[in-house]
Image 1 (tube, rainbow, N blue to C red):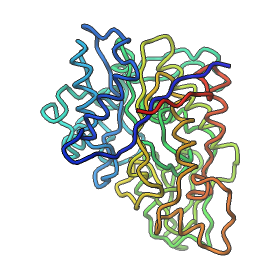
Image 2: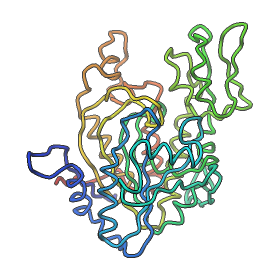
Image 3: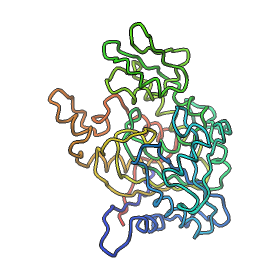
Image 4: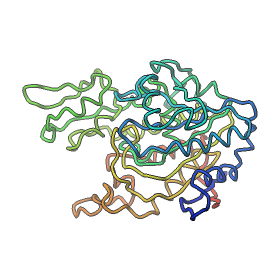
Length: 376
């Protein structure tokens, strides 16, 4: 079985030594970014700009480091992401750009243009066939992503309330899907609401973009309208009282498999390069307008031309780390009644599931889970 190379460096710096952005530049050069032949080519750098209020997203300094290297090698880079399916500050290109600017991503700070890949309303996409796909025949990908000559992912590796963690595959597959593509990936499974646990706070309803939740004024309880619900799971992350759950155990697995297939659609047959930073490992996605304290310590920067090997290496590094005191993960483990799954991501969010994503990614030929870790 093929063994992919994953390059790694930690976050340590010395007084008067290299800064972290400089370490990242050196790492991506050591990993062979110059082998992509970037001269005169459009280079899409996919990252998450962070929801307004969230401050665990990757700092613009890291994006600038990647941009500087791409320009040094003659490429024409642009930062990009697609619009979200849920209400928030990134649901159309105007608000998305405003959010990016407020979070520090401007042409001045990052050194290149910023484009929202699926256009003003999230409808500017192209259908890309998925070779070997079992769940998706053709993925709906933001047009600017597919128009680029070279694809680079820059990922904040973190926890996630549905997929266990958000790594390169999540950043690419879900992140590059247009609004229609995101709906397609979230299509399996509908949430249920436990009436006894529901407090009637209506916070979940504010996160629903599809009229999938209906509030009963008489009972002061929330209900799911299955005719409109798309199963995106945003309500799950919004509920502070564990009143919302998924009854279909296959929902997360189907989501993970679709996400892997969308990733394959984006990267298949084109020059690619992938970067993941395990830093500020929040328990939930950067799509949240808040972020809890990290569940794990800052571990390091990882780079590979194989997104699957990259995710596997990051998972292994995280599972070997000690939980951060006072975090959601640590509190769960300290609870005498809590069932220890011996898995940091599952222990942080027991409703989540991540293994099916990596297994399916390997099955469809996205990459290899076998890797050689090369330290810098």
